[in-house]
Length: 340
Image (cartoon, helix red, strand yellow):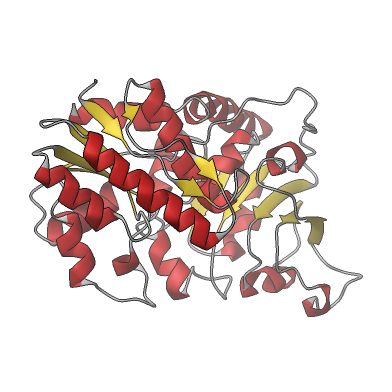
């Protein structure tokens, strides 16, 4: 049996956006020669039954784990991450932890010594970006750390997906996800050659101050496995919070460390990115030439006005380059290779 292993788990749905990144990571591990020693990946919505299957799968994996193996764990892993660590140490195996989410960096939870000490038991870490890596270093982590840079989003292009050519007099900026309070403030922006197309949940037309003079166009909500084929726009917006001037609140603070899966979704929709300049992924966007960063949404009008059609076209070409890696799992593959 191979020495490089992982443990598949149960997810609530095969088409659940929340589990998409972790399900993709299991596939990428398999494609890179890692073998699942747990049960097969399942998609059972019942939480009790799903938890039971995951518990039995982890136990089965620990029993099968060979001494001296390398185990890749995804964090968080419900209640089973600590159990997996215990089993790996029992079998004298090395642990690589791929970090998806950190409560300690979310303001509503605050710093958790328990979480930090749990993760310190990992031999190697794959984290989101340089900002998150620096935070781990500040917590006195001795583990070797690699950055994933961007989360992969496995997907095969649908040739029938609608992709409309850019009208530079009416640029469509897409926001996909939960509609935060800032959405309804967008009508307060100075008008320019742009509007906002909205996809997702939580949209409330009653919150629009003047429905006859709005830059908002709600397109609907679609399952995670279908939304890529429905989104048709020119730029994708990564922004959270209550105001136009900064990404505030819990989600805004987290954006300073987090790689939002939303950004990868936009790339698969062939769109350059507009992102808060203090977001951790702003550096990635600028470095790869796949969009631009702003300190306030009030800057959008000027920044778009400064861009020539040729510059936007170059951004789109750069998106195609990065997209090819994202949809084929290259970012996690490279991170794994750095640690092997």
